[in-house]
Length: 213
Image (tube, rainbow, N blue to C red; front, side):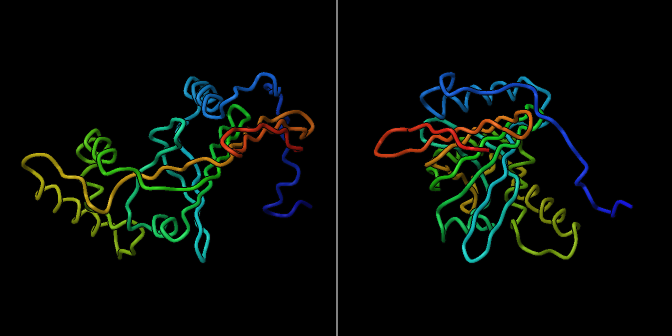
């Protein structure tokens, strides 16, 4: 008799496609851009969603949204007083994972973390819907609250406070950039013989290696 919670019989073969080293772009960011464009064109619900792992004396992981990327790195925004921010301030390294499983793909990025400039944060904050701007002011991210009603009260209070004029950028809110040191592209293949290629930044240039699945 199968035990409750036993998932050992679940099987799925990955048969959509494969990748060859000669087909990869020389820049991992160009390769990411290609895959990201394909993810955007697919039926993936939120292709910008990425798992962000951080650590200090403990380990944390959560889903955040990618807002910008280029050769310098991958940018997301958060409250600077949140648990993840405190972890990154103590240990400025992070890993991010894009689980594009509908395409039988994953992209894993590991690198150093830095705050982006206040001007960059302001530019993005100003583009957000007003409700999201007020939400940034209302939420003391990661702090414990006794009920949702407290959060709603804080939101309404901030909404009233900023009812006239533009909403300023909170000092405690802004962006981080993950500066990649390695980027791995994973493509599912049959018989669990997946294609894995890792770009690593060494001595000022990117190298590409195939990894065993």
